[in-house]
Image (cartoon, rainbow, N blue to C red; front, side):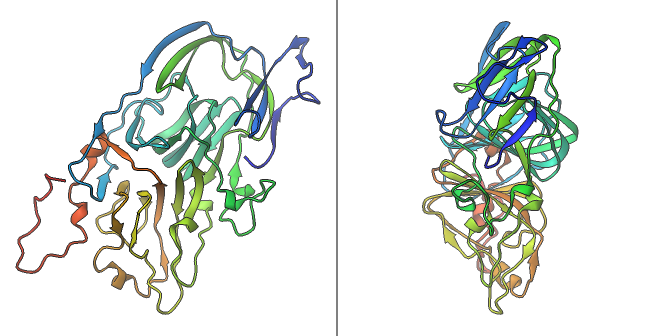
Length: 397
């Protein structure tokens, strides 16, 4: 994070004696990139290495679907039944070595704590409110929030009501795009959001209970269980630049122009070989002859996944809330027939969507296969009047 935060009590300098009621506290430096990246320093009641019991290791298993054809795809996710909790209920749709994209509609609440030791997470809250309880303090969230969780953060969800998430996990760093920041890390004028739009942890609650506390840690492609005899939120204070935070998609300030702006104008986050973008309600292109829809373009070096949140997405037909389109590399895509003409003169859009562009091919799971409509690749085709209907032509996709 590009700005400093402090919660609770910390000593006057780093790496010096710090006591509570005569008891020497344990200092932990939690940092990135081998002491050259962002870091925070936390002060614990107990050693963070203290483990009462080593539990089971459970590998993460994905069943890959390799389609017979390379084609554009549409997946309808909204009616997926709730399953699992906020961690074990994540169902992977697609992944590569840089990012894993999952859908989560939990049926129950976590009865343990979780820490991702393999990478950063961005969780888009499509539906739901609640609090992410973390070692850094409480992080309230609501519909439309991106929850950004750096690796190594111990947390658990405390949801209120039904929840629906789109989850991005990456072994790299999830960052504010570098072109939005100056050399000191401050977000620039002209960027589509500012520091005031970023919400760090609120209250720090130091937990002093003893007992048995299960912590699941994602490492080496699976979940390792640890049992602690103290509450994992035993931090009395911390300061630094590394912590979880939220940013609302509704606070993204769209960049518009006289003619249509390219997709990078919607960029919200950057990761290794991928970006996350936000398509938000906005005024459209204002040149009298502008075509206020994306022009046809070929993803020669990237794959485009769009998750549709709400509103009317003017360049697509057959899209509903919770739909996902995947436009793979090597194929052109653009507005479907008739939509460009229909859009002429339209002054604004109500669309709300989350896009992820990856620069390496995505692999699909059988979960994605089960949601695939099988016909989306034909949605640009307008058969001559004497051609038979395409009804039922789905099996070979």
